[in-house]
Amino acid sequence: MQQFRGFQRIATALAMTACLWLGACAKDDPEQAVRQQVEAMQAAIDARDAGDVEDLIAEDFVGNEGMDRRAIRQLAAAVFLRHKTVSAKLGPVSVELRGSTDAIARFSVLATGSSGGFLPESGQVYQVESGWRLVDGEWKLLNASWTPNL
Image (tube, rainbow, N blue to C red; front, side, top):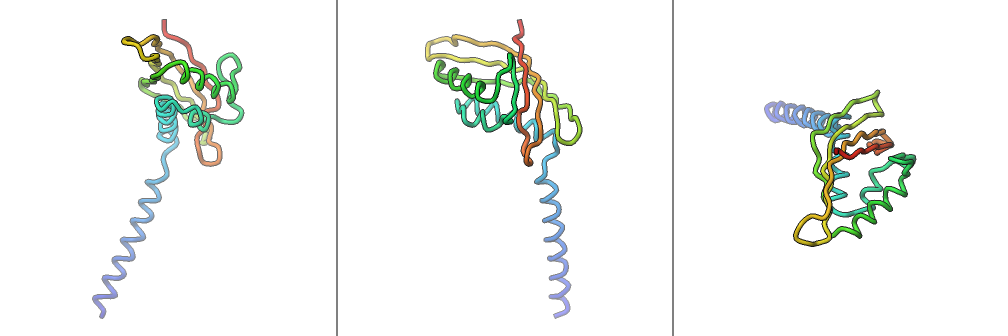
């Protein structure tokens, strides 16, 4: 009986340790969480899903030439309608944290699209600087600027 109690205590301690460890691992560090959101944006573009693109964008988003959240969704939908295939290939992503709720992510992206012909109709490399904010526990795209590499 005494051995059973000893085993029970060890099992309880191991279970509690595992819960604490898993809880700590489940919380992404902010830099990794921003990288995951950048990758989620790439996946939404590759999936041609304007709604998923919009879900990653903050309500008060501002982009090139004053584009807002609605304009970005409309631009994505137009690109998806125009091109049968759309792809975004990311270069290395650097993340700079600014406090605990703001971050800047910089990266290059190769954007391509084709209407289904033998060769891609368009492709362009862009340099992107994007601002991210932690909103209700989720990183949202707050602003972005993109310039073509010439």
